[in-house]
Length: 186
Image 1 (cartoon, rainbow, N blue to C red):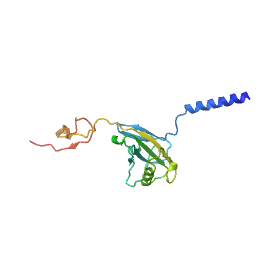
Image 2: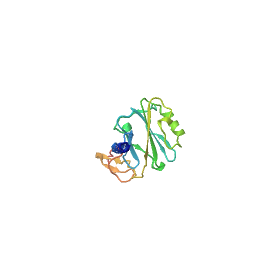
Image 3: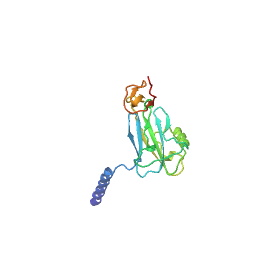
Image 4: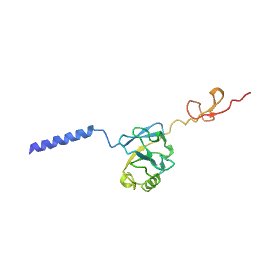
């Protein structure tokens, strides 16, 4: 009987070691911070082809990030930012929960938003909580926006492409949108 006890103990230890070495395969998506208050949402390989993104702030504000003309889920390619964009989160709303809904078919976004609103007091939302067609997976992540440097909106470009003023927005530096003006002949 001691041989069986030793064998079971060895198998249990072996299984525990194997579990510790394997990476977390349940992560369907990752958040990449691209600025103080901006983020990219990047699906992992092997996910369902369509997704919807929502945020819910500490203050209870729910925002739909993947808004299309048809108001349906969008195609989400693996290892590429959703909608090929970064999303800005308002700092004044505090920490947000990011809900990513993966589905095997295009889903209407309005009913998902309503169901999220109905479940706003629930700590964890799962696919079982939602009334959606087809196969659906829900991933919940957190993002904390921070205050950063003031946003640069550009300057006024004069003759020869020279920035002549900052338009009252602060120091003139590269980037941002520019207003083109005609050169003035004296």
